[in-house]
Length: 161
Length: 161
DNA sequence: TAAAGGCTGACTAATTTAGTAGGATAAATA
DNA sequence: TATTTATCCTACTAAATTAGTCAGCCTTTA
Image (cartoon, rainbow over the protein chains, first blue to last red):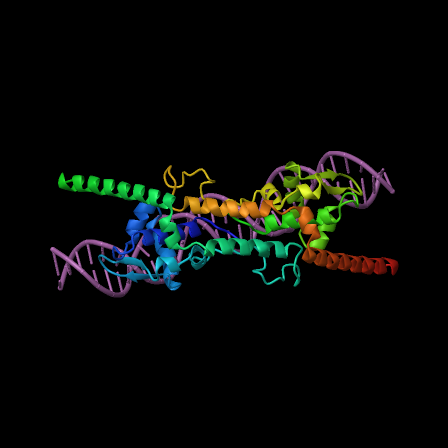
C-alpha cells in the first residue's frame, strides 16, 4: 500500500475541477498555478484520469478538462485508483498466497485494514469535499492569490515590460 | 504513507514472538524459518524493534528475542512505527504547510484518513491477534511444517549424510 | 574453546517517484 | 492562412526506498 503525492495530486486536481464546475473546461495551466503542481506532471496524471473516464477533455484554445460525471458520483477511492496508487495493504493483493502459496500469519489483519481504508475513501465524494468548510476557505485563498497575480501581470503588460 | 513488507514483516515477527511466549528467548533463525523471512533482514528489523524497547535480547547459544512488555500492551501501530514505516497520509506530516507554507486543498482529508488508520491499528494488540481463529490456524500449520522439517533433518543425520 | 546466536555496517539490484524535455496534434482566432 | 493555445505522447532522469546479501565482530553457554 502506498499513498504519495501522486494520489494526493490527483485528488487535489479533481477537486479543483469540481470547485470550478460550470465555468467551461479548465486548463491544466490554471490547476498547476492554483495548486502548485508541475504542469507536465499534471499532464501525466490526467492521461490516466482520462483513460479511466473520470474526466473529458477539450483541445485547442479555451480548452481544458471537465468532470465526466456529476461530482456527487465520483469518490476519492476511484481517483486514487485511477492513477495506479494501490490502497491495498496486503502483500498478495488479497490472493492469500503470501507465504509459499498459503496465507501468512497476518494476512487477515491486512485485509481488514484494506477494507477499512477503502470504505472510508469510497464514502467521500468530490461533492462532499466541495461542501467542507476547510476546503471552501483554502479555495477562497487560492482564488485571491491567483487574481493578485493576474493584476500584477496586467500592470506589467500595461507598462510595456 | 506506505505500508510494505517491511512493516508487515515486523508485525508478523512480533506476532510470532507473542505466539511462542513463555518458551524462553526465540531465535531469529526460528522466526526466519517459520515465517519465511530472510534472516539478515530480520536482524535489521529487530535492531529497530530493540531500539524502540519493544523487544529484549539474550545473546549466546539458547539466546534470542522476547517481548519487552505483555502482549496485551503492544499494539500494531507501534510495531509499524518502530521500523520507520510512516502511516501518516498527509504530505506535510500534519504540519499543514503543504502548499508554500499554508494548508493545501486536501490537507484535512488526509488528516482524517490518517486518524482513521491510526485508530484502527492502535486498537489491535498482539494479544488480540493471538486469539484470532485465522491466526491460530496458520500458526498450527506453521508448527507442523517446522516439525516435519526437523524430523527430515533428524533422519538425514541418523543415516549419516 | 568451539559453536550458537546476537549485532553492525557496507553494499546492491530493482523499483518507484516526481519530475523534465521535446515534440506532435487539434482547434480557435487574428 | 499563420499563430497561438492547449491537449497529447514518449522518452529520459535524479533521488529515494526496498528487500535484501555479505562479511565479520562480540557474547555466552556447553
